[in-house]
Image 1: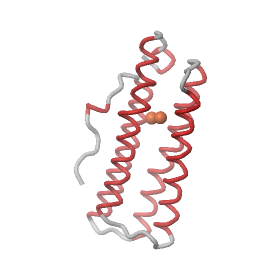
Image 2: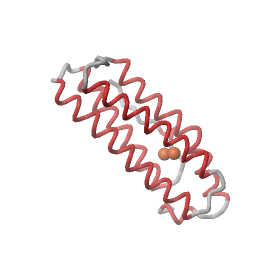
Image 3: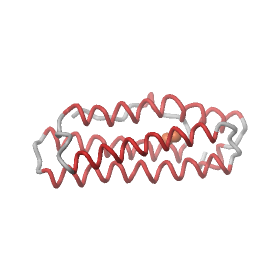
Image 4: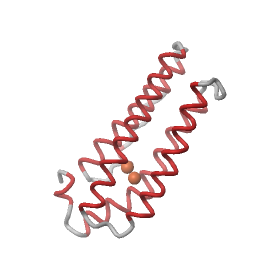
Amino acid sequence: MTEAWSDDLLLSVPMIDREHREILDRATDFGGAVDAGLPKKVLEQRLAAFIGSVDEHFASEEQLMYASAYPDLEAHHAEHNRLFTQLHMVGEEFGSGKIQPGGALGLFLRVWTEQHIVGADQQFGGFLKETGQLGLAGG
Ligand SMILES: [Fe+2]
Ligand SMILES: [Fe+2]
């Protein structure tokens, strides 16, 4: 699998960019394991690592939204919850063998993550910049 990270995904919000990169690196690790035909146990571990990095990131991004009094916090939080539920479902179905490992799953994880970053996250990054609050995120 090719490198998932692209500079187009940069929001210029250091803390968030760092975490997004971590998430996409985990997606690449998972896709690489699928492509290499590694054992299911390894795939499960890598998928769990990806999901874990997403969970941690959602929590820290939401904390930043509270701290900066972001007006769209509720909608963004709801989107995180939707994605969280979907992702955990995928994790469980993969574990129980309902979903087969394949390029499609890796692609799904990647597209899913990128869409959220260029959508809701980009808006939040813009808000932090406009309101001069980048310092809250290490900027
Ligand atoms: Fe987000
Ligand atoms: Fe994010």
